Image (cartoon, rainbow, N blue to C red; front, side, top):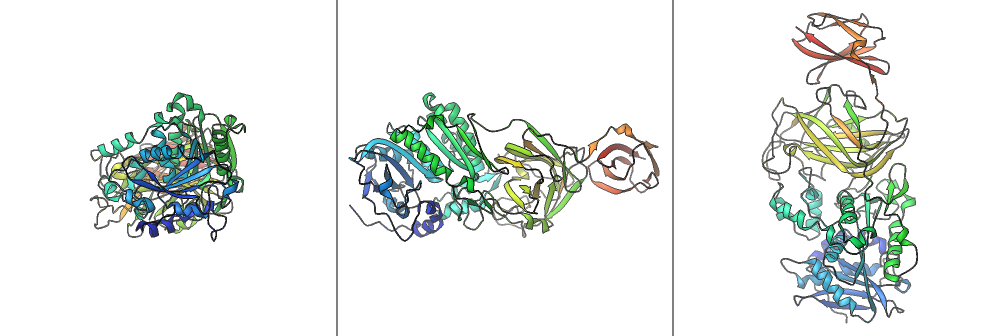
Length: 632
């Protein structure tokens, strides 16, 4: 039943960009599978969806694996997934690969409001009556091919037996497009390139509003899941943050009989689709994970074999979560519904680009010019123009608009599992700015490998609604929190934990014009002086989800170990201490460093200071003392 495939303007745009999604299927790109059938599957509205059907010769009563794709069913002719490649006859399954309504060969079925879950239900209705099918259907696929599995599962077709969504979740949310209130520009452009056409809707709703609330509520339905799932994600995938929440929700809210039949696999993998790395490949960015290669395929086959073939392979005893511990680079398992650690450890930003377990001192400034933004280097990106995965960030350290704060070389490990948060105190001379944060592992060999990153727009520091929008005034200090995506990571002994702070990360995120005007519109750019305070009054810090014993760079001793005479003082201050004081740093109440020096004579000349209250930090080896001084 071969037929002519109608031309579609999306074809050229999509097939080049998303060929990498299917490289994992391919054993020889020069050869191709020939579909057993090329069919039109009827939908309830009278239209049809185009499908390729692959039936092994020995398959007269087999289970089926269904793939629903917006990326051209013909691409799968280069090889079936899960390692079968071109060897269809080795598969115990029949395969049905369907073009989404409105895409490629299913373009004639386009409708204004496609219900892809209902389309999936209708495809299942067609499969169950085919002579080569036994009625059991599993679904598989990454990204959009994963999201549609949830939409299909929501329709509760009795023949939908199980699902393996990869790097996917079902929810359409504000922060999926506006992370920290900042448009993920490169991702939206990629979605446009792929033919989804969502830019007009997204850019018409740049504040969190009723439309976003309705979208989020209608696409969050763990209570409707009534089949077993194996959910596969990657720590370097932009979907991982939502995936871990969705998984926990299915464990607690899915139909009661399947709550203990939900599994999660998280590897050291990127999203795929825009580079050579993909879910299951050993190479991820600039790192190599040979012990994680294709475990996703192995576990998916074990899952399908158990639920579709009835193989007694012990799958039901598989731990509910299998996850890769980045940094230590090993696999762990648990039967919990989440691997998040509730307790947090604090490291404070400090002068001298330090991260310390003691409260910080001083402040650090940088100049942010929107016309010369700091570049995106790897990360959880989705763009053909950007690298994807873990990349070395060292080149950023030569830029004057990027600050770094680092622990000393670690003498014991720091292990985290959850979302890292930076609570910062920010001052700027412009009404708006962004605070971009990169979390890094500083290797002993000098590499600074990206773990993940995040951003927050200062006008949205109080929330993302238009009512919550608040601009900055010069001279004022504002608290803001930047949250990073969920990750499981261990910094090993000999490494260091480091964060990079800048005003942008282009081209992943939109560059703030910093003028306080309308967002995502043409306008003049303002250069901003941005100050990150990290004083006793403004203790900027990084909160790590872990149970680590963090030691301070300097132990903070009681204030009575040092005496200032006189205090208040006018010109000279005598410093008395039994400790051998090596140096001091003097700060004003905003945390700004005024001066620093040694104490050869045991005196400090304050005659040039304005009247007011100051803090002096004294250093003695690995110990420090903070003293308040009044100048009059």
